[in-house]
Amino acid sequence: MNQPPSSEYFKKKSKRLKSRLDQLELADPKQRQAIAVQYNPSKDKAPKVVAVGKGRVAQKILDLAEEHRIPFYEDSGLTDLLGKLTIQSEIPPHLYKLVAEVLVFVFQLNQSRKKKAPSS
Image 1 (tube, rainbow, N blue to C red):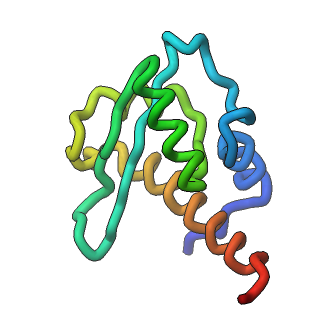
Image 2 (cartoon, rainbow, N blue to C red):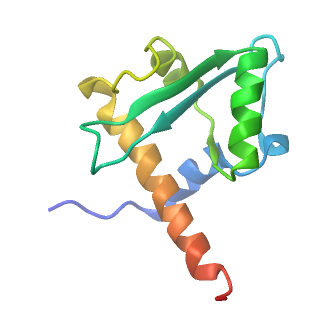
Image 3 (cartoon, rainbow, N blue to C red):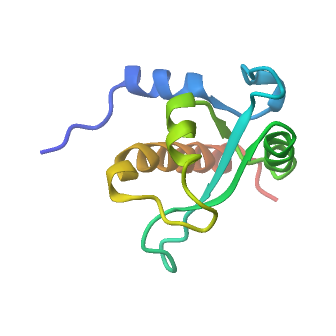
């Protein structure tokens, strides 16, 4: 039987998850990389890479994410791996677990935000 993730797991993941650009530990602007991943379980077999960029393009991806209140997840290793994929390509099976962990964590964060938001 699978055990639920420990609180230490969530602390570690939450350190990488950011909601604003000014919280990111960004590299030199010319070295910056950003990847956007999208997953619609009712349409897609697997998550897809929807944007890849370095330098100014990475900054535009980050700006758009911040504008739309999409959280950021910092992981240079995962960024390097996903950055080798082409736009609209599905995440390969050997990366499912890594990407799924991020997506689940972001989903849980969004759920907790909805619970905390005042009802209209």
